[in-house]
Length: 59
Ligand code: SF4
Ligand code: SF4
Image 1 (spheres, rainbow, N blue to C red):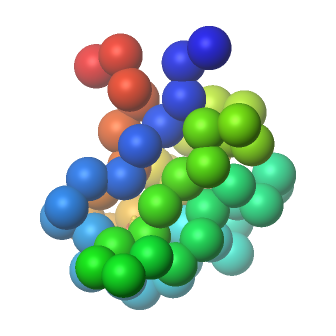
Image 2: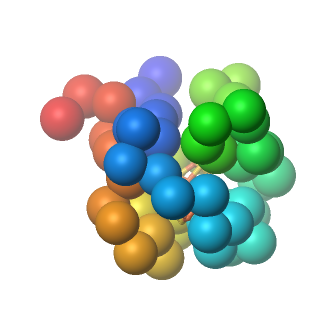
């Protein structure tokens, strides 16, 4: 299943974590990360991110 991934442009603002309806986003060492087993590909993280870091994995 297609999921979203967060690339290294992430500035760790935390906005996406608050918006994710499935709790798939968590803080990592250098950036936020998405649990592929939880992501439902809603796009909310991409919509709220100020630096366009979350990407559709198939893009
Ligand atoms: Fe969460 Fe939706 Fe982003 Fe997946 S696409 S990580 S479900 S906000
Ligand atoms: Fe990183 Fe964007 Fe999420 Fe902020 S909204 S934590 S910059 S991926």
